[in-house]
Structure formats: structure tokens, C-alpha cells
Length: 174
Image (cartoon, rainbow, N blue to C red; front, side):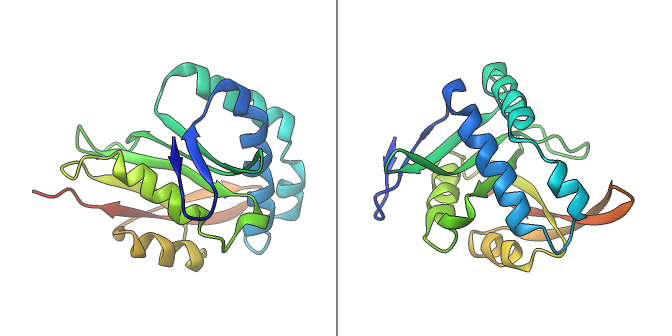
């Protein structure tokens, strides 16, 4: 458990956190991606369905998920583990997700989460993540924490809308 300067506690997630993580996940997507993703897609996101997915993730033992909370409320979460990219080095990690409740945006919670994640990663391990090309705020955030675009992109089709994702890399120290 990590206590931060802004009264936020960061701890390992348990299956009891699945519903709160799902709520943050869906709320964050609706707040952050309304200018990129179709409204019909965002409206279809269901917290209960997402909670079931998170319960499976949290019981699978695959990767690590942490939550940030204050005053008994989940403000955000991060999830990471072995890279899923075909071209990844054997020991490379991937930041699968980092999301905040929109009410927590700008309060330093994302910074605390990413610092906690990076403190758990050996400097000799690389770490990647995927971010929407149009999400400049996230690009800036990841650059501040040592990640850089590595030139790899992929296009996801969401309800017939092509969405470009850019891969960022935090290189391993050699």
C-alpha cells in the first residue's frame, strides 16, 4: 500500500474492487473519448458487463492491477503485465490500462498511479502501452514519465469508425 501526498491510497486490487474498477473504466471512456468514439458505442458500455470482465481478470492472476482511492471511493486504477505484442522482447511489460474517474482528473492521481507502476518495474525491463492517436493529453502524460512513441501503430474498428492507436515505449536501461 502506498500513501501519496494528496491523501490517496494506492493498493493492490482484489475481486471486491471489480465493480468500482468497472465504474471508473466506463465513466472514464465516456468522458475522455466522446470526441473520438461513436456516441452509440459509448452509450452501450455497461458497468455490470465490465465488472464481470474485471472480476475474471482479477481472479486470473494474469498481470497486476492497482487501485487509487480516497475517502472510501475508487478514483482510478492501473493494470499491467507481460506484453501482448507479437514483437515484444521476452521480459517486456505492457501497461494495459490506466484510467481515472473524470472527477479525479487534474488532481495528481494518474501521476501517483504511474509512479507506483514504474517503481514495480525493473529498470532493465522495457514497458509499452497503446494510446489513441488523438489523445494528446495522454501523449504528454506518458512522455513526462519516460515513454516515447516507437513508430508502431494499429487501427481498431469501433462501430465502423477506424481508430488509430499509437504504441509508446519506455526503453530498458542497458
